[in-house]
Length: 391
Image (cartoon, rainbow, N blue to C red; front, side, top):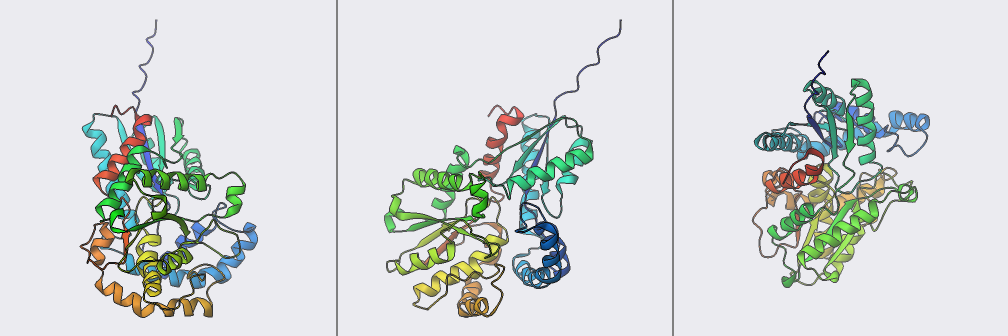
């Protein structure tokens, strides 16, 4: 009588996934990255054959140069901030599960660029994982972000011929540990409603057609903002929501947009009042926060406070906005932006550390959770139901 073969022990492979960045802040590397990113079916705004032609004959020529210049301003000795911080989180999670005595292996994977989702799946299979848990690091899930991760993992699983179960964590916008961590980061930045401080929650915008197709992203951004404001005990009049980083002007995007919102808040600001800005759907600081906030959004707010005239409806970088109007918009804030950048402690900002602030600080950006202990606690709490973690 033959003995039944003992079942292999359960070993969970975790992929912490994000969008990705170029391998280097050069025009060539950025062009390669953007060509992959912008040809994603969930991203391209028109039929693929038409979009491919437009992208490779016109858009990439301009956008790769402009984006490379932006990446050069945020690049660190570790490389891309997004990749470096995600790698740190990967190490922290692996250490945590080892200490807990759990058979869990964590790998980082990016939808575009390196480390790729394909490589993550391949390595976890080679590690002997019997199942995969995919955590897109977008607390508020969307078709264009979480959906792209899901597509990429499904393709990688087929190529690797991985036979185990694959489960996707579809957002954690109202997770209690996450909400408390975001609220604590705002408090730690010095926010005080009693002092008259105001709070702006700025989220990445998405096309309205996705919402019409059933995307619940807008509901999730509202739920997160309400939960964090509730954790902070805020009066509804002291906080608001906006959306940033429109990709193009040819489609209708979820609004109100951050730039005109900042203009309105600056116009209504009381003397010596402070505005705190937090971006809860970015788990790790990246180009949209490390560049857009200090180089475009903060200078706009300060320009309005100083009584300068701005064009908040123009958004530098958005397609169909690369002509003279955008140039005028950029030039209007260039001198002020340079002055602010010289005063900014750049290294601390990139690391996500809270810098010492003067009493007359008018605009304060609250960094993402990044590689903090609080962020690791959030990730382990979100993953606990999937890995059998008792905590």
